Image (cartoon, rainbow, N blue to C red; front, top):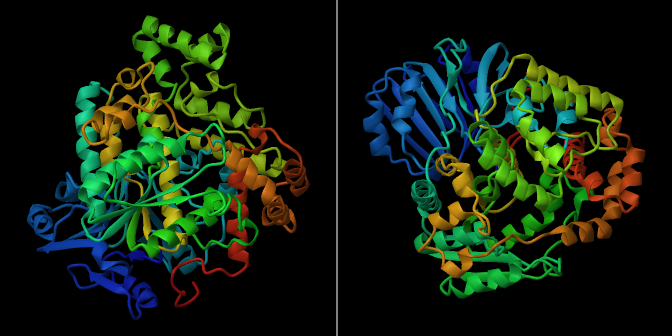
Length: 610
């Protein structure tokens, strides 16, 4: 919630920056030289550290790390890049920070739940786990170009803005890379600490790895003892986490809120799961007992490092965490990320077409009928094997077009983004410029396979979201075990053809948890829809949403046409027109939070930047 840390180079000039941060309650960890290295405020239970000779290492976050093991391992660390040897095999979601003879290594997670950001303060390079901390220290202003990209739907910020933030002059370290500093703070070579797995395992082999990774991930959630809580929507992802947690936790509290959609049978499946978990405490909330989507959004102010599209859910999530806090929960588990990990994206068929064209065409023919797509459009989509760079350039040309057609629109590197109908020409120019700039360096995709790239892109969008939610929500932290790096690596190692079996829903997850989750629950063939909840909340809180268009900060910045947004909200707009709404609301609330004086960081800046 209010945790933060700042990392400094092993140089005399860094002492002045450290002085601006040090005050009562702030942790200080020195380099071997005695100069300040880490300064900040964090839960001591989230820290495991060790030192040997001139090597220092700190693991911050939810992890299986043990100080004794870390200490023995870092005795063999003589260069920053060797730090990864010390944390090999650790489960959880955490930052790895090391100082080796004054040279620095820092990295977050491949899923973007933990990130590293950098800037310069009075000429001194500094890094932090929160971009807004560095923005406050340096006096950085919001980056309107990045905000314009955030308005796109489906979101692409996690790839297009991989090394940018929403603050000018505050940069991000791409999740798969580590930050390396020489002793004087000079930037070392770019180092990639994580690579996606080759999807080469059979279902049986991958399921064994997923089972181990998920079991270890849950163990990091329950290791502190006491009470943990978990969503129990009735879907396969959250249900599986509940059964895993029930085996390990001292006490488990589950939460189910009932949807309004008459076609949503989540309540039936959740009730079946509760019947198999008699030792847990179960909270069941009706639509009247839990806030609607969009409730309170008009007055919402969220001091966070970047906009959060989950403003729609903020009142509901806050209510949920308040309730589990009353039951003693210290950590809340959510099934987010499960869909991305266990439902291969249609673009895996294009990967398959290059190796086994006849098999790919058989599968495409089946899905073509399901999606009502024509032969010609499907063939064009499969044969259009563009590079990632060309995909970015095409996306830049297409931002103002209508939404891509259902099935064929999902055969690219990732779903092509579109500007909302209320974006201004100035915003569109910023969007296209960002996409073209991303393409200019002939970037590598997140993985050679389109399906793996697409899954990682979705996971990182979720990782960014959960990081921001944990900065803004009161109550226990949210944990998404499906986004733990070890789980992601295990799930993406399966051959996509093995993870897609007609008539079976998420076969990899089912195989991984066979014997842990009852078979009749693993047999659920689908997930429940929530369209009715969306439109109910939209109708009930349309007034609050319209109020945000009055004196809109986004309109003032020249990024949206407030009148066009009002017209969309007033009428029964098609779903495709409303899809970008959540990103626009997140950006609007974020700008209002800054303008209205909501503290942008979890501590008062000691001094303004010079």
